[in-house]
Length: 214
Image 1 (spheres, rainbow, N blue to C red):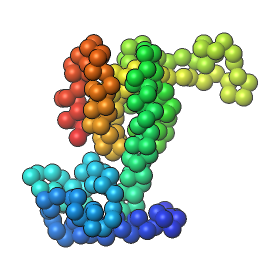
Image 2: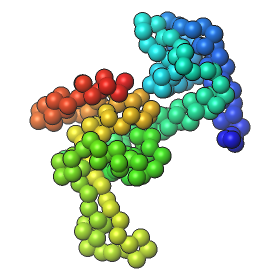
Image 3: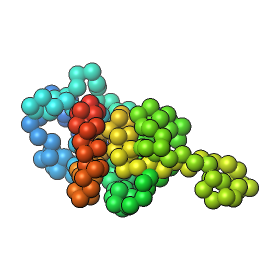
Image 4: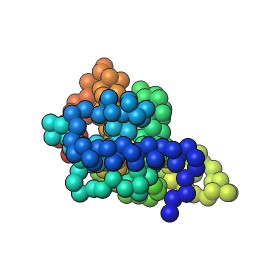
């Protein structure tokens, strides 16, 4: 059983009340006024949709396979925090995507912010959709620095290209990745508007995969 601090407990109770309301309503036309009235951040609405709690079919409809339980409210709280953390990290990814390096994005920062619970889980997902050498570069620390650190020994360093990072995010299937991939593509398109080759590459692989995860 999850042990919640006071702040989390307040949020869970608030989310539970929201879930019960949405369940009783069956469907709503828009979420914004409901969230505003309950003083709940709009990010919660994003997670409700990407988590499949609400289904979009003209109006927002409650997913009849789910029940508005406190456990669901706890899960919602966790994923909202992950999504909020991701949005707070966007500046890092903006700067990385602007970088002229071939593989500017640190995998060890990215897997956490895509919502994976373990590094190995994130790596397995990455290897399933991305090509080493093109989408990402994998080295052992000693290969890069020429020095073997006594405390850590050999460890791998993975760096992703902007193109590879977007591809991975589109296929990652974690709730955080699904909630964020639209924002990622929008930002990447803006950042790379002068980079014709990268834009062509993104277009070639993007929208089919984008819709597949949303």
